[in-house]
Length: 419
Image (cartoon, rainbow, N blue to C red):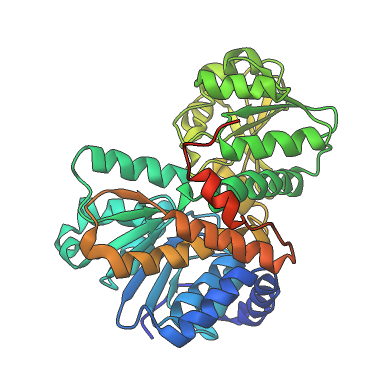
């Protein structure tokens, strides 16, 4: 096995138990792993994966390894690593891992480069840091890369920008675009796990609080639904008139962030953009405001501006930093502005990641089989893969659905029949 860098290998046994617990909730990925064991679609393929190092990711790594992949894993966020899982992957499954929860910026990119030292034929990203590092700093390796997959909205945005500029040098499957990913992982996974992270970090009661959500994409929709379900008074801020209209029709108050800033008690950003909560918002926030992020990068909150405004900074609870302002107000930032559901909690439940990582595994297989036919651009997951994952998930839940009759198929394919 190649070198690795994890916190403590003594944590491995606890990680093994949690990985096995998660596997029980991942029947679709488990069925794919069984097929991969038989067919070995990744035999001779080197993979580098930059993902959140969680129990669910561990089961994805096991599935890819069962399919013959020679795989290395690094973290896609400095605070998202579960150290016992990283230790277990190294000790029990002999998968090199470069990830330590709380690693600094320099270590994070040292680990990214360690994963790229593997000289991958295929990349697997959550935020596009592997792909962007390859294109910026390690262009000599680009010719050996067959393609990649991308897990999250932020990464897909970055990759499409690269493709639009003519800079993307290999094809990438946008796993995030699959309906079995963003309809479920983004909405139900992010909705529940973000609430989980906020409560674990703060132990506050959400009922009766004014809860401001930056954005109304799939992740934000899920959070808005769950926050309202916990009794919070939810406000949505948006820049897209269609999404703003949808939020209004869903029963939420919609206003600019500047109007929400003085009245909100909890703020969560989920946009994929920079400075959604900015200096001029901090200037009018109420004393004790709590600010968190559940978008991929911590740039959604302008923390440098808050630090410049503050007279002191204190750690008041694990993952809760209190910034004291000159006028006596205090603003709390959760999880250093990084993904709160992974910084302070365990991320998405395994049952929803089952579909996301089924998309990752089958997307990788599709890329290996079809890379010679694909251009250097971003592709959606093929619809037949998406539907097969949905079918397998329903089957695992013992849910049956109807099948079209031959007469119904003929009717749907005909233009002659009307009323």
